[in-house]
View 1 (cartoon, rainbow, N blue to C red):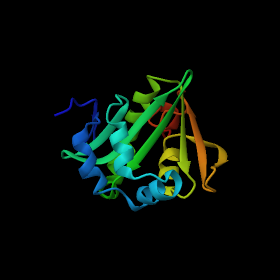
View 2 (cartoon, rainbow, N blue to C red):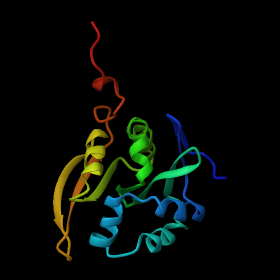
View 3 (cartoon, rainbow, N blue to C red):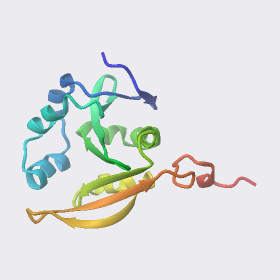
View 4 (cartoon, rainbow, N blue to C red):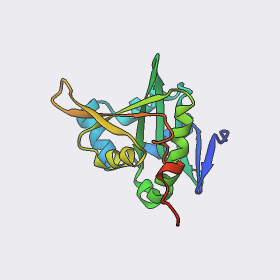
Length: 171
């Protein structure tokens, strides 16, 4: 078993291992399956096997089952985050969304500015990123006619999801 990096609300962030690939692919969300086919034009199986040696790829587990995958590609002064969701994530959506601020804090220990490029048709991830304080930066047309939206988030006390500035005032 992999070491747990973060744990919150019954979910665990663990390093990605090859043992995660088949259970995750068999339960990959319809949105992500379409994204692989339409935007990336590659099989999810092939793509995930290529990620296996990357130490900055992680799995979110619920009761030992992979329900989401995420990673960050480090650049000189920023990071490019990505995420894939399983069908089981919908059953755990509230816990996942609330625990995600820890994931973003973890990524911000690596880079102050984090980007994410998301297929324009994947609204679930758009909403998740907006909840986490990401803002749409630009619209990018790909060579195959598909488009992605680039989101950006800079580390600051104001953008921290659980920050004091975002909590309601109690009188």
